[in-house]
Length: 290
Length: 336
Image (cartoon, rainbow over all chains, first blue to last red; front, side):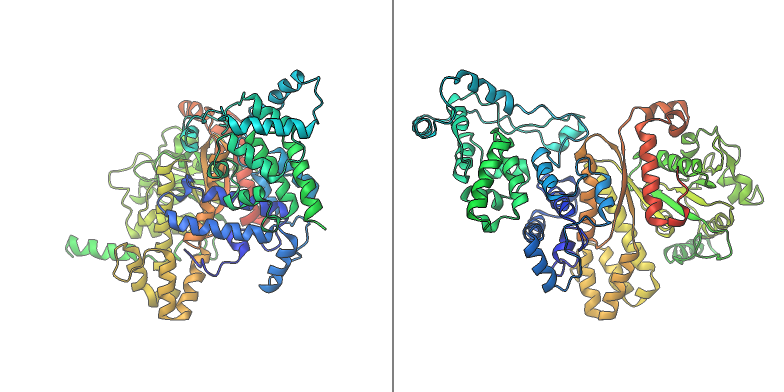
């Protein structure tokens, strides 16, 4: 690979040293797409091993550049002159031209953007309406008598139940590879979770308050989804997913990105995104951000 | 002279064409113009259509444009521009049936836009001789236009590569599918090595470059990175000179017939891969959505942007043109 060893983190992500957080994030997702297993752009050029090398460096680069402090340190160490500020640079125009989603620049908006949209897919077409709301509606109405937050009892009851029973969720249908879909002119967001009608899992979700890493892991396992699958679907690196579940905050990028990850994971697992993100980030702030 | 040695001499000349004998670079007194060349490894990806409509878009913004069909032996540009089978073509120019290049310029229904057709060609015109090519280039340089838009043929013949390399703006067109993507990389590879081979500053390491073009060479040069390594071993100056030449190669990319966001994303992916593999900065200048308006307009033999002026595609073309001009010609930003 060309000058691979000597490429700095900005060059790995194909961005300028004064790139804004939005640009960094977009570049990260673009790189993940470009070097993903089924990326068509790799055809006849890179093999699996080289692709893996690139991906590893991309992760490293993102881990540092997405964190303002780590980025500043990196810039200093490498003699990179940049404002290092969080203002969008004049280079925003290029990255913004073909992006359908990102127009805002404040961090708050950025976080909301990550949470609200899937940067990679389906912007040209209508998204299939999120079924999370519909799903969770039903159990709620049937439980109107019991308080939603009778946590200790319901939770332990539910967990007792699920420990005994096998999860009923079917394995999802085999996915058509994205490129084949495209050739057929089909645009569908294939979900990795079939609509789960397992009331045990649903009530587990309903009664959850904290939404800690362990809970996310539990739901993921109950849904029968591996870390690999979740990673392929959300495009979030496996390491990050593991760190989210084990709550190794120091190995995750900055808070705003973590929130986005939680939101995406929640959507993939069909649990209420906002509630989950809120709960997880509350704990994150309490223990990590001092 | 026997025909055999003639051919040898000619081939020799072709292979070592002076890279600088092109529009803009050879005749400093010629009216200043910008040359756009549209190529792409594969046939049928939409080069003629795109050349035609980029030319139209430029002309509609008030620029004087000449669109030249260099897809000799397979000329389609006139159809895409809505021009009937033309009465004078490049063949007439080469055979000296006409006096000058202006005599083969054909008007179109669009103001400020003229074209030169490659149609009605005599058999064998696809194999342009070196002298003919030089004459053509010199003449085109003299035309009084702001822009020259070349519709190149498919494939990677030396003529095609040279026209592409020496344009001010070289545009590659591809479809979002594996065959087209592979051909695009092949084109880039061919153009890349052709450029390096002809660069005067790299004369010393020309044997190395020749080796690199042969996949099974004995030095184990399998990729551009290997070539740079070997060149630097030869001498650090050569390594730097090589890098310098590579940095001058800046092809642009258009993806045609996109249907989904991931089709569009292929553009960014290819850009990234080219940087990491070739060290080349590819500029992704835009995409064109799949649209049935295309085959309709071709069937009617009417230019797309005229037939469907309010279509998504028409605005795609404008966006692409604006994007290219912003980065490559800030003075001439006369775009609607």
